[in-house]
Length: 346
Image (cartoon, helix red, strand yellow):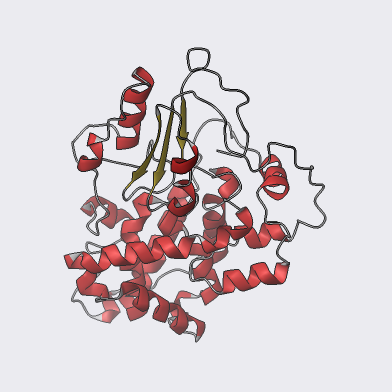
């Protein structure tokens, strides 16, 4: 949702109801701050890990402190056998915060990199190569976005004023453990970019009486919940509702799985019922059925991605039985992470 305003007070009989999934609050969401939005979600995931009997036992009572210390160790050359430096890890790590299906793997990978035994090096190498292969496969269909247009809108409408300098953007990134470098790279273009001027609607909220369902995940690094929930105070006409969805990242309609087998994601359920009857109270009962963030994984997925039977531990076998890990194309992994964590693609 951008700063465009619906003119007039048009009743919903003349215009259909609206669904806003993952809310970019006008006047509050600034892409120049994008690189600072991933650490808070990583800290929230760390708290969930600490309370989990498996993840907490592996990472201890302060998983965020463990992650923070690991980045410090990497900066000093820890686990050089993997062939990556701390800047590469910092640029790749946001992928495991943003994508729900990969969050389960964040702490097992960190645990292994911290221990850095030969078996861990092999498993991490296998994981990164397999992930690159799987996520590089064509998804089918024509691309629906335009990086050029997205950049034009971002620098013209969604940037701080006065604009932060490249040095300020670099300092912000350096202060993060999970920095996707999106703001940093876009900021290099700001001065030379032919931005369009603001109109009278810039930074404003919609002025509309049509029914609106706005949804945002509590664990969304792209449209953070503290900014998205501003819509609850702004969209106050009858039948306009904001729903915060626990555990969900960006794209609540698809990224809010439930425990009931075969049931649609909670966001899809709420959206379908709202469209069917926009004036009825939002049915949020599926929130009680949400599948929580957990650190257990389908054994078949572990076998494919980790090349092992256990996400966390190495088999009790002599070191010489472990196959030597082939070099990882870290540059390609970093490019993949950069593409998948780009705000303009979402």
